[in-house]
Image 1: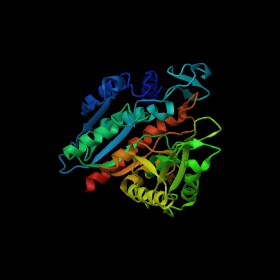
Image 2: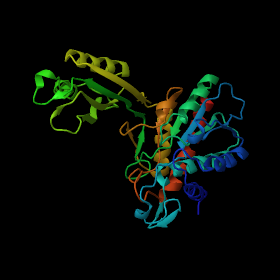
Image 3: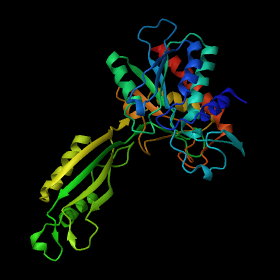
Image 4: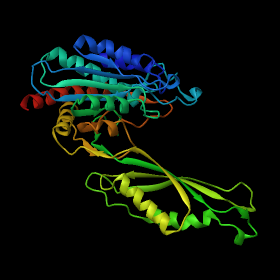
Length: 389
């Protein structure tokens, strides 16, 4: 059994449902410290929702001035299991069946974390002197609110003025085979709660009331039909979607006094959060609505155009598994949205994602060591790149 597989199983065995880490970071720090990593806990949050964070860094050993930093980022927390009785085996007991390793977190994303660590171990064993700094940023708050995890660590690093050059987030990005897709960016997410006020009254006397549902419908139709931008070579056009509408008392003879609509933008780099807010409010004002609008910015979009990080990962994938990887910005958000605020180049790359968050989550065993080898080869290529700077 390979060291990467053993470590993956050890991590899966920890029932680290967000925000709990269940000792995963202690296991990882114990592996990293003998390699010369300085491990720093930056835990955050209230006692009843305490988040575990680890920043581990090994500085360049060649004495190179202004050495650039490569970060591997990930999360030890997992989503809840769902009905345990529907699993074919206990979700926190690693189980092998038909060439697959089953367990909650197998693909999202304990395999990636194990592959990070073993890749670094092998790299340091073969090449103790490095021209780059290597770091790991790990949290137990990615599947939850994402308030006291990576976001807090990034703020701390920003305060220190610690520059980051490259970051690989180990999210499961592959589709059919490990290595067939990496994410070189993500759309931003902007949510809002719209409360449109009317005047409640008897439905038989509409002249004495004002129906907010009737009033808001034309505005919603205009928002749904709006083309917010054209997208670009890396991103599809920005989208606007309603997720919930709540209005009425439940009675059929009452005109409601208000209606509440939840909606969300997934926006690309062609639009900004502020421009989208202004355009929405202009539509609402034009329709003469009385309303309250509360915005929540979940994350800004980020994009890493092809450069030395993308080339290194693509080259490593080609060498190890012999395929040409696809660049993509599809999907939801990740902690890359925080790291990109202080890091020049951020990509996401990990195992296949077909079973993430599902019952009987698994990773293909035969793809675990190739993932580790891709990470290791990426370190080697970036170390060469760092020696040129």
